[in-house]
Structure formats: structure tokens, C-alpha cells
Amino acid sequence: MTEGVRKNLTLNPWKETQGIIFKALLEYTQTPIQEIHDLLFDKAGLRVLVKREDLNHPTVSGNKWWKLKYNLEEAKKLGYKTLLTFGGAYSNHIFSTAAAAHELGYESIGIIRGEEAHPLNPTLTFAKSRGMKLKYITREAYRQKTNPDFIESLHMEFEDFYLIPEGGTNALAVKGVEEFAQTLGDEFDYLCCAVGTGGTLAGLINGIGSSTEILGFSVLKGGEFLKDEVEKLIGKEAKNWSLVTDYHFGGYGKTTAALLEFIKDRLTKNNLPLDSVYTGKLVAGVYDLIEKGYFRRGATILMVHSGGLQINRP
Image 1: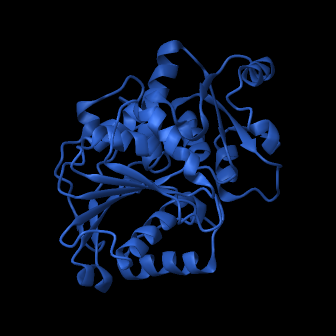
Image 2 (image 1 turned 120 degrees about the horizontal axis):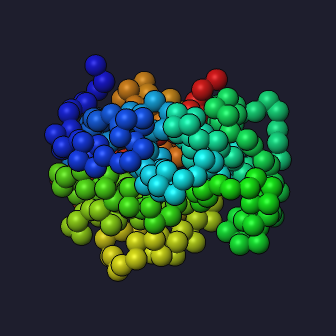
């Protein structure tokens, strides 16, 4: 039995918000909240919980289920047959988009930042196995991913497609994560998540009451720019959130021996699987802030496990 796992008593949002194409095809599995224990937490007088969204779907897991939900409905409504999106070589979004497209009968195209390298890593191997066409472009060209002329050139090459932005982040993604946030209840004082493009953090801010402090942990080196991106996405003034940029461990897709050892310890001691790109950095950051006395004594911290465990595949 997983340590400290308790049933989430909120109503299943899937039953309340059935979507057009998700209704029978891309199912949502209700996920538990797991309590983890450590002498560090006892000394600090804190309760620490993890919302295990990594368990919500076998392949379209974590925050990606929620970020893709309304985008996939929109693609269906508009009659598109092909999905095109962007991501790095270790992108959870590329992995999940390929999986969702395969399951729902779409063609899919992934525009990948950087040169092709063999053997392919687990993320790109899986995407290709699910029929995703991979197009590698230079990092310089990748920076043009929102440029209309560049998008038009992709239409010239691939013809008609429904475009999903990098990380799945747009207004429809924020709407999906906001819906998820509203299922969490209010039995916690701090809500923490990993941040790549800002869409998940924005949705949590929109969906959680102002009495909860929300912390987003950037996995990008130099991720300070994400604050402006999140402010654009939430579309309102909110003062109960902040962006933490000290726990990127070298940058996106990079890691350290210390982080890998920390991840190993969490699996051994807490039965909590983490990845080195997103959730490992999130949990390591929370542990460090606890050691530094950031969180007030007597508080409850809830971390969102946003999936990404495919990176651990051999």
C-alpha cells in the first residue's frame, strides 16, 4: 500500500465536465492525495501532501490531461484531422500529445527543438511509436514558433492542422487546469507546482481561492521571464502567488547527482516516484524551503505531481 495515500473525496470532475471527444475515448481516472512523512516536516510542524495526478491516465498523464482536454475538444469541433505542436527532446507535452492523438485517431506532428540525436531518448521514441512525425529545427528557428510567417511555412509543408502551442499552454489549457484546481478543495495552505511554460501555474491561480499561497517552481534556468507570461495568462490581478527560480538544477532537461540521489530517496523512503525534469525539482525545492523555514508552522503543503515519469523509462 502506498505510504499515506488517502482517497480524494471531491467529486470526479470527469463526470461533471464530460467533453465532446473525451466522453468515451480519453478517460480520466480519479487520483489520490498521498501524505509523505519526514523528520524534517515534524521539526517544522508541517503536513506535506502530494496530489498524484501522474495516475490520472496511463500516457496522457498529470497536468497534460487537463491542458489538452479543451484543445482536443476544439480540434474535434473544428473538424481537424491533424495536431501539430512544439517541444524539446524531453517534453512531457510531446509525449502526451502523441499518445492522445494516437488514442483518438488524429495524425500528429512534433516540431522538436534542436538536432536529431540517436538513439532517440524515451520521450521521442514513444512519440514516434505512436505515429508522431518529428521535425527537428534549430534553436534559432524554434524561437520563431509563434511567428505567423513561420506558422504559415509549416502549413505549406504539412497543410491543414490544429496548432497546440509549446507545452500545450494557451487559454484553453488554462481553462482545463483551472477546472482541475477547483476539485482540490481548501484543506491546504500552500499549493506548489513545477513550471515549464506557465499554463499550469496560471490555471491553479485562477482556480484556487486567494487565501492559499501558490508557489511555482521554474525548471528553466533564467526562468524569471515566466512571471510576465503567467500574468498574461491569468488575465487578472492576483497577489497570492510567486515564482521560485532557484531550483532548476542547471536548466531544462538537466540534472545533478544530488538531485538524482534525492529522487531515489523519495522513491525508497516515501514510495513517491519523481522525474528529473519537473517533479524532482519541485519536491527538492519544497524540501529546501522547509529547511530554510519558509513555510509557517502548522501549515499544510500540497504539491501537484504533474506526471512526466516517462523520462524514467530505460
